[in-house]
Image 1 (cartoon, rainbow over the protein chains, first blue to last red):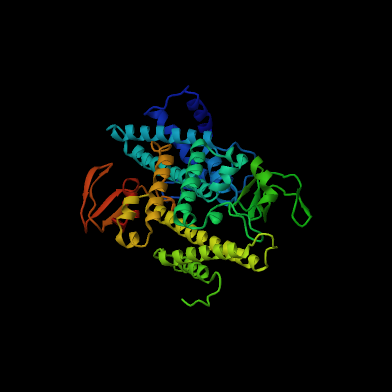
Image 2: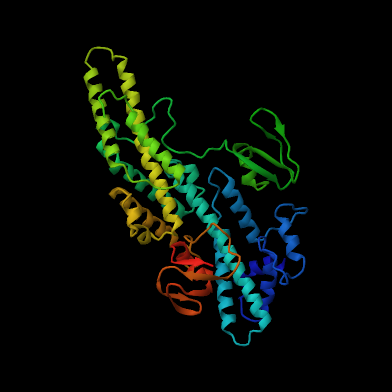
Length: 265
Length: 198
């Protein structure tokens, strides 16, 4: 897709998005980038999207993933991994910038009386597409937010996890840990005798008070390429071929996910 | 309540409430009296420990039982509050982060403790601060249950909600009317129950 190349140009500020013919060609290719758009009868511009859609799961050849495909993959991984994965700040910001520019272009074209009927149809598709990309971004951000709140106390005490969060996420984590602690304190702990009013007890035979990600949770893994040999918890080894799908504890494939050799499904 | 109660019995009742709340998928009224009773039990247990500890003598075995009871009670208290706070956050997100909408609902409000109302306010301000990072491009508090399929949606007005700005200009939504509007403009009103999808 030459959208990628155009996108790089845009990013570097060498091409300015403008209303007019260049706009429509840019968006035609963008429509094809969609992986989740339902096939609308009579509107489908050929079998092109069909092919692109299957790329995500059953990739036969090495293709350079578009930003949206990359985000979709990160989104799926994030939703399935018990741990918090590294933040994709640059990717997200670029996509959001792109969304904003496209919304502006759409606005311009909608107000232009010389826009043809056919172009209006395209504008509608682009608008729908924008809403759908926003949905993924939102779901991705919220998935991370959910985990960050769940593990807030763990995050504030573990520098290693902090490196995987954005500054804003980190702020939210520490604020959240603080208000939760405070809530426990005013509701319960302050009324208890002095010796019991701590939140970091470590009594024997009781799970720790700080919730940590459960890395032993099983996940479905789909190999995107030939993977190096991995050792399973029972001692056996497994070498996953490309396209192989398997169920195993997250801790086993943690490194493969980080390197992008597998995706979680 | 009889004196022959076992240690930790009240805490079990408290946990049962949490469990019922999960099973019925609703938030129950904050059980202030039960929480207070358990806190009183904790103080009594602490006194019992102090009485058992006499200088110069090895601690008696009864100490272990009391200590276990204390730990368990405390954990149950925290679990109860933590469970409620989780539910509160779920409710908060279910209405798209519209805190005033949530707090003005008398039915819900009556089930919260004052501290929980404070908690929700603080949580709301933390989320708002996080949201401001994105505000120009998208609203992260909007719904994430179903991916959008259409740009526009036909809605039926259930409650008056005044004048709303949409891409077609401002619309006065009045009860009983139907409108075809852009989903992104009014999504939050659907979530808060002012409009219904037809």
